[in-house]
Amino acid sequence: MDIRAKKRELSLEEFKHLAQPEVWTAIKLDAASGKGFSACHKLIFEKTGMWVEELVPIFRKLDANLNIK
Image 1: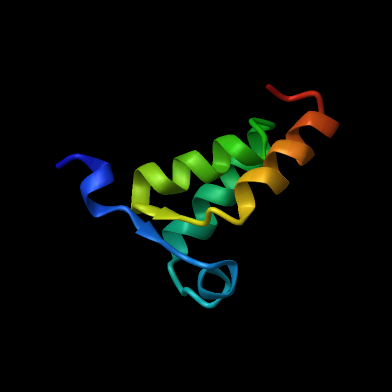
Image 2: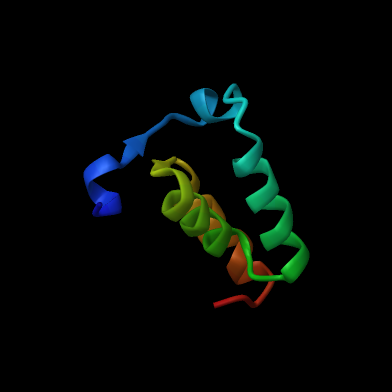
């Protein structure tokens, strides 16, 4: 199945209240590997179909500050 077909856009508030352990595991693994915030956001989307558009500009700025491309 094409992941875009099951894309689920969430607000930041909705995302914070989700209780999906696989999402938090993915976040921790990506953070530990130094891939950056945007990569983590994309990985979560690939695994779950969840996307929080509000985070895109924030993660870009954070990654830029960390010199992560």
